[in-house]
Length: 144
Length: 299
Image 1 (cartoon, chains in turn green, brown):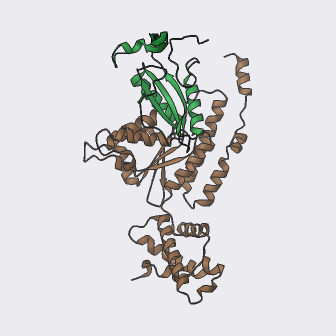
Image 2: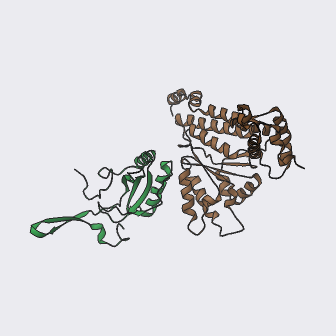
Image 3: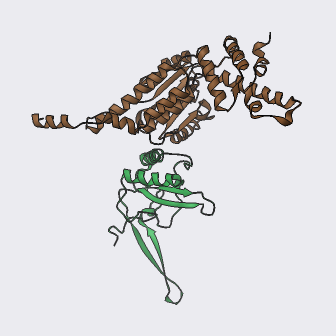
């Protein structure tokens, strides 16, 4: 059972304790070895299904070393240290052409969590949706 | 520390010889000796750097606290003296010694680092630095980054980012600045930050006549050609004449001369009446006449 249900879960490793810097570097090294392009994204709009995050830098298609991508993670943490930051690894192989690995590398200090909204529809059918408490404040004011 | 502990520490030993053999550095140094003619002071310095890194590794293995050595370098010398070639070898050596992780070389000039409008330079420079991480960043004609006559030149921004990375990411990349000796000297005087961050200044001397001849022979052999005895004599005559002319660029001039000789050889073969019966020797031999047509011998 997940220990802290208030954490947003998204991508790989998100049910594990936060990755250490060395673990992040090792994952990036693996992605580079596989020939995937790394990019770094951030958001203050948490939802397990929100995949439209802001890009931090240009995707790194020809970096050979994990230190380069990790440098961007560190730079992004300096600016958006209290937001969600994730690392994506894109596989441009023909027919795959999609994100092959994606994991969160930074979270806000306090995550207020989610609230389940139930909607009664026709014939007593129930519709469920998630609402993030954090989004009750406008963008930029969240996680202050 | 008790006497007994000190005794124990001294008993721990490090096999420098074995580590040297494992690192394959000797092979790279031998290759350097074989393929690069002359450059004795440069080769000596590379040997010293290799020794420094090995001893540093040994010290760390025995638990001696050590700042990793700074290996940013500057290569000064005239065109065609082998700066880029040595930089490539340097990347290989540093990789074998475990100082850099990937061992690739990214060669850039001002255009690759400096942007064209406000806000363009920083991301452009960072992009290049990220590509070079784990390897060597070779900045050719580095003094073009600094243009004192234009105080709003974006080069200054690239310089600041480079200095920052050279300091903070010392473990991640090695920066080599290259260019003419006198202009680099001016560049370092106006950018003391660079001078203090660069530990190794290597000066590439011009080649002598004999060295240029040896280089030309190596180039010919590498491309599977041979010089006829007559052509060798003409080449020996050609070199001092070319050295006196304008735009002489050491080994690069030799390469260009040989490329033109190959062109003339091809043309000569094509004009031959019996061109249906060319032998292997015909195709590989550069004759005296292929070199004698050069403008160096005219007038």
